[in-house]
Image (cartoon, rainbow, N blue to C red; front, side, top):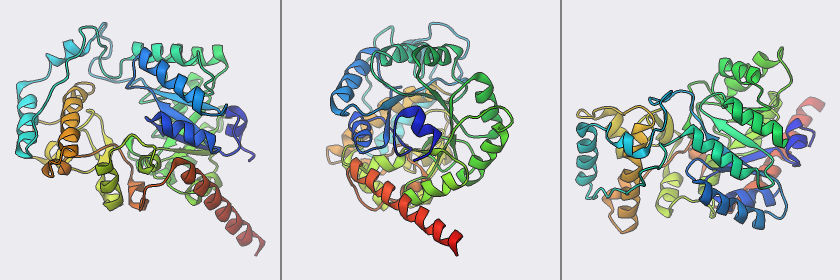
Length: 377
């Protein structure tokens, strides 16, 4: 396919698949797409193991990694912030609210002990350490979300000859990213799972392309609600160089999600994917649950804490929820949730990642043929 992204990444079909699961990353790349491993949850040691495994299972196909370095957090500008030091900033009201909520559904909140020097969630210094590890492997892309990548990240990419991608949710963000020197933009509409803005993909993609055109040529990947090859073709008809996808891979057999969550995805409608601050402290689209309703609309809710404090609350809470649900607590299922986009309404079954890539290719070809017929007529 004639796309600048194909040339930059060494692929034939510009379908990028973001996943926290190494199995999905390897399967997508083997099938002709481009897997991108979400590395934010890893330490340098665990990331090294994951990338080594991908190297051994990707059959020499290219892949990339994604980190999360927010420009704006409640701890911005502070030095040597640890997970332990942040725990003391969580108010008793927030802790009590969390425990009461889980207890109502028969769930005991179990906390996980962390080391004294464990970095805060979304720590920028740790993210750069992860990038250093990744360059010991044949990665072909590094990507960042929640702001302009730090200068050190862009410099690393140039030093190693690896393109740097950045996610944007508004045209003004795109202009800043291009000025900073990124190589690929991911225009992520509000339909997307995880952290997202308020502008729809259909509007955002052409808006971003138009805004950056006077500056320089930067390929734009469309993201947000893209679950089929027809949607991918539609975005490329608007000028996108390919698609960045995430939610569609959660319903694959290789995914890290639980069987309970997969069943909830299949039963969900697009309206069940809501933006909530209840998990990270920033608006993030996820499957609606008792948890999101309680934090967003509960009469006794203390309100979500700013990032990264809310992530400290939610990490142990969701681990406890998932354990209880897996152990047979039917009430706990009402709280089971995960980041997922509005495209969840298009999920009707669980498939292999390779089968999803093949469906994207076939669906894309059908859409292209349909457009060609319309033009011929």
